[in-house]
Structure formats: structure tokens, C-alpha cells
Length: 93
Image (cartoon, rainbow, N blue to C red):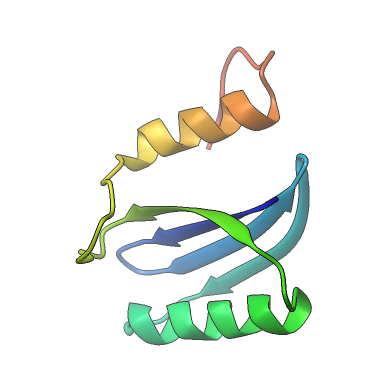
């Protein structure tokens, strides 16, 4: 199953699709309207990967309603690195 990553930054929106450690799609917008950027990203994902199912992770500054778990972006980065590169000893962002 492919992984969908979404980051709502204070100035930028970023999205990515990963499968088995390989980056398949990236999306980057400097946009004040994060919801608009999210919809554009999801439309692109649906166009490139029709009929696919995803597991998703979301981090950043946008407040969302619903059954979501809030994760600090430093923790999310660490978890992503552990998943993609389990032998990594440090990360420089």
C-alpha cells in the first residue's frame, strides 16, 4: 500500500507519495489557502494513481477536525527516517 504524506506549513504546503521507500510523487505550493493546496494535491494523486488505496500521515500547522492524531513534525520526521532509512544515525533538514 502506498503512503501519502501531507505537511501544512506556515508558508508552504507539501505532499508526497511513497511506495516501498521510493518517492513517486511530490507536490509543493507556496499558498495562503492550505485547503485549496490540499485539494489540488489530492486531485493530482487521484489522477496519477487511480483506484489506489493509501495510508496517510499529516503534520503541520493546520487545525483539522475529525478522528486525527496530532503529531509534532519533529516526531513525524524521525518516524519517517526510521521507516525509510532504519540505519540512519542523524538527519540534517
